[in-house]
Amino acid sequence: MTDLSQRDPDAVNFPPFETEDLRTNLTTFLDTPFDDPSGAQPFVGNYRWGVYAFFDYDGEPIYVGQTNERLRTRIRRHLTNQRTDAVAMSVLDPFEVFEIEVWPLPQFQDSNRADQAARQHLDALERLITERAVEGSQFKAILNEKDPPPGAPRGPGAAFVSRPHRLRARLRASLSSRFSHRPTRADHFSTCPGDF
Image 1: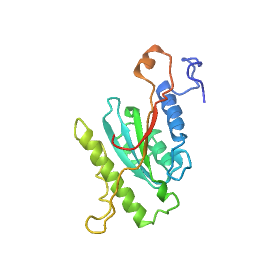
Image 2: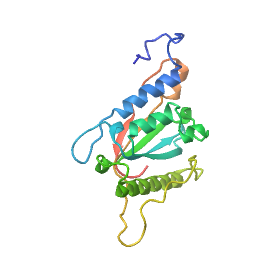
Image 3: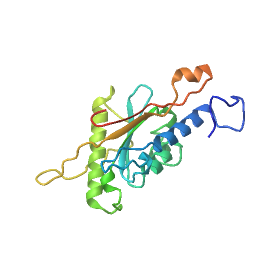
């Protein structure tokens, strides 16, 4: 990676500042150690199962998704403009994403994709995060192309799903750095339980 503050802004062998800024900060975020309940600290991007949310420059939630392939793989696919339904359908513009928040599910790290209990838990968590995102939105909406799956069945014996610890970070340098031609790395990371 290039030190953004030292490079020639007119160099042609580098991607535009916004693209390089996103890639650098996304890699830093995905390689951030996450305090796992087991006491381990794996990189947050290495969790197979989890839910993620993207926020715009005004702090508005714009997209909520889930993965059981790895947070790193799924989030990169969205934000590096590789083919995903959300990008292909013009629902999500990666350059509108300012912050990201993830809820890894370490208890399912060794589960395979066919594990119905893990799938139901993931679906229920995505629905919970989506509902909270919509409730917290000024516009009472997010840009997902479809509603999240229903999750675990309700009624006697149904599992209660609560939000696990999360990690949130800014993926873009501040707007003032864009105009001063002195890019700065975003280094706002926070791990916390609880609400948005």
